[in-house]
Length: 440
Image (tube, rainbow, N blue to C red):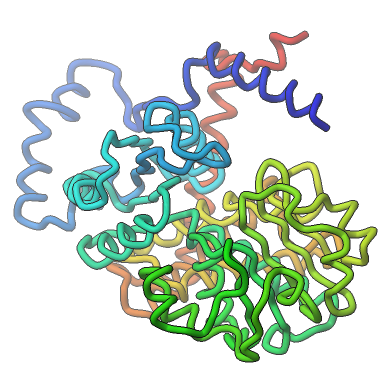
């Protein structure tokens, strides 16, 4: 396994150097002669400027703002690499932008800010609003990621979300919905242990409660052990989420991981602690246990070890095992639907609707222990997400425009199909070199 990972890392470094990044800017209009330059730039461009000055929302119609988002990071918590800074974070943000385009037809611009002060970071992002239809926050350390998201959602008039929070939560909840179907345990009756109290766990808990999980049936374990019921202690330890955490642990149990896992139906781990879960921990759980081990690249427990210990369903963040719980299943479709209705924000209800769309899509293809979520090579899933997210935004009254289900489906299909066709055309015409051909 380590040799394969080493080979992949070496190949990635080699190809990044060859391509000098992963994305580029390409025109979407014909440029054939001087007339085109006069239309797209001066003097003709003055007229759409005047229209937007009179009616600012026309910026969504007369520019690409309505299909463009910023992927913004300060590089303080990048993947499993930690605080590597904004320059080193850029390959990840470019990769995110690539996935937005390839899977959702969304134009995304990577922006790595050399600013770690949360208040100054917020002011910079707010100043970007005229150029973008949405903001995707990425790889920002906690607890400031909660503060930044909360303020930007309140103070900006375009959707802002933190993918490490809401994106992870949507896909995780989708997986748990279908895992509950496979093992035959209703979600609302399940006892769930959550390992880790960071951004992913916090948002996942919020969406789980919306989905019907009883808060008293959830037990959270952090570095100190099971999170207590003492609100004052929680307020000091967990700003921005103490009220949510205080709703959990209805049985008032104390101790550590073993006590939290005893009799649990499911464990959801987002700890960045490889190998934290042991086979003996899985054996403490209820019959047909569900194990989501989210640490990447090395999970809290390897799937084969969890299965040997009795786990009925195991999910990880890795693509080389069944049941990959990956943000990439969520953010392209969620933003596609959000942008298509020009929503002003992305609510938890929209994230839950995306989770249900993912779960229903996988269920329609057939569920079993190794197939509880869709995969990224199923483009239809992003269309389904986009439609249902857009309809939920309209229902909640936060959309700038109302479209029918058929109209939303047509728009999503058009954007995603065009992105795929663009990539194929560039390859076919030799404007992009396929690295596989170079290897031959």
